[in-house]
Image 1 (cartoon, helix red, strand yellow):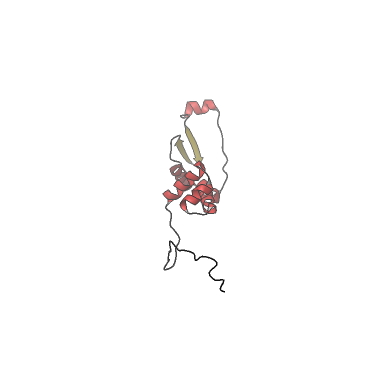
Image 2: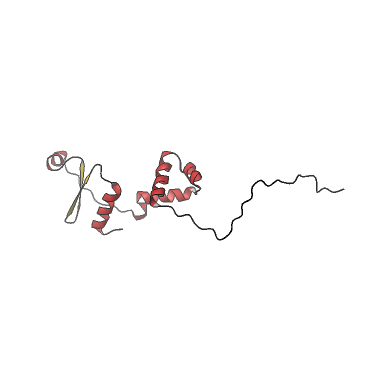
Length: 124
């Protein structure tokens, strides 16, 4: 009277064997940017699941993309609309840093503009 045969044996359909040490995946900056952009279009959870990431990793990439890791405040001086219209094209932002003047057009690449301003301020 054996009770061992009451439950059927589980059938293994797929077996994976991992050999060697596991290592972290390396994501390119372009891949991270694409994943972050997708997370704003849908949801962080869905995007994290699609790429096999933890949602906290996606939130970290989003925070770094916003520049929150090195947050600083800069005073801004707004001139009147008449002065802007007569002196400079209205589709341009002027940034003065010491003696330097940077004019950023509306369609400028944000990363390039940020890199130029970081270079002028000496921050990284």
